[in-house]
Amino acid sequence: MGRSGALLAILALAALARCFVPAEMARAPRDRVARSAGGLINKLRAKSGRAKPELQQAEAALSSALPPGSTAPALRARCHELLKSNPEMLKAVSSASDFRISVMTEEDAQDLADLQEEWFPKESCRGGAPWCKELLAHEGVLAFKATLPQDETSAPVGALVALASRAAIEEFGGEATVDNLRKELTIPKFIPWDSPDRRSLGYVLSLGSVGEVRRRGLGGALLRRALAELKQSAGPAPLNLLGKGPKDTALHVVALHLADYNRVARACYEGLGFEMIKEEPESYAGVGRRTHSSLLYALFIE
Image 1 (spheres, one colour):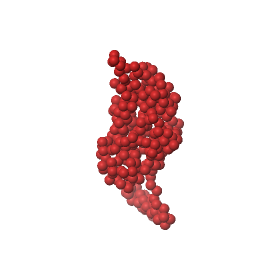
Image 2 (cartoon, helix red, strand yellow; image 1 turned 90 degrees about the horizontal axis):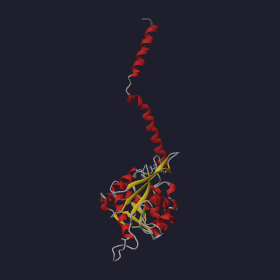
Image 3 (cartoon, helix red, strand yellow; image 1 turned 135 degrees about the vertical axis):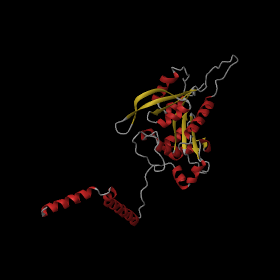
Image 4 (tube, helix red, strand yellow; image 1 turned 180 degrees about the vertical axis):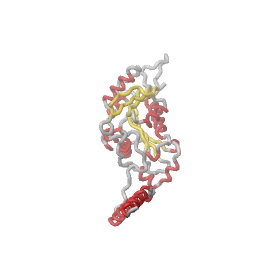
């Protein structure tokens, strides 16, 4: 073999050896560069006194009411800081019965507004705390909050708002909601709902809980409390001497609307006996050009 042939053989062996270099060794230079860059960034942060930024929603999962692909909203509710400072509080709430459920008042307006901004799309959060204050002050509104048993500040970790009267549904749900409920429920089911003070139909406006306390049955507990209060608020139909009531004031049905992608909420409502009545395609705007159906659910009271 001549000198040129020997040289070609050596080059071929070198190329073949490179083909069998372990992947770990091949990645090592890149890993060293990445670690070096990360270390440099941390040194610059330390020198300038800037802390490493925290990811939004790091401790709390996104609300199932937000459209798929949504960006994580800022965590505004004061309960998050409370739980971050006192993580032991979560150990005291292993099931829904461990929470304290109480009535919300006008003083809870800011808390309700902060929670709704975390849970629902921006277009659903109408007027912030001022709007929530009007909502909670209305005589036809029933609202409840869930708090931790050891929390003396009563920071809500869950909330439900129900509209008990037709007047409340007209004011806070809108005329379109009233028309839809009449068309799909009160007229075909012969439910008396002919005046503003009628409470024969209740409407769940909103329901949610923060990510730290989900999967404990809190949504169902809030809903059961609301159903009991809606029944009591409506009252039984009064009877005369013939055993008939001159005016039927009893609660006949509880309704709500939700987006088709909200499988968590659908499972919660269906587990308590709600059934889907109607689907309206392309009712809710999603991320980008996507749209989603609106589902009308109802629970008929026997």
